[in-house]
Length: 55
Image 1 (spheres, one colour):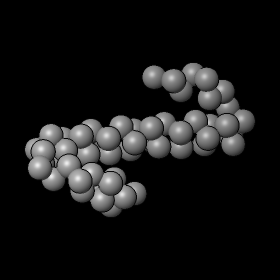
Image 2: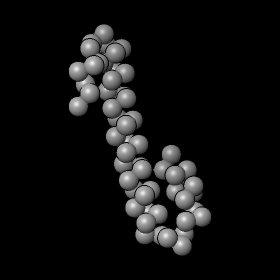
Image 3: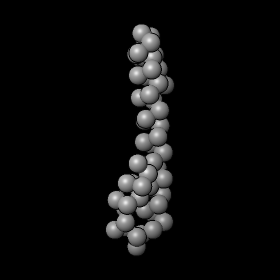
Image 4: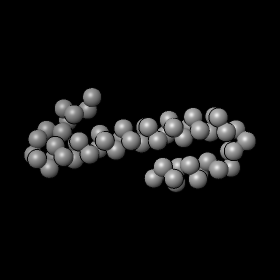
């Protein structure tokens, strides 16, 4: 997944520092989102209330 994000920003090589900051922020946001979705799905499969896991 990270490789796809990095390769998508190849055209921005001239603005390298800003591009890498954007890659890092996007990858971090994606990782947080995936973790939240995993926790919510795990709770749902156990039959627990996943609505309380919003924080």
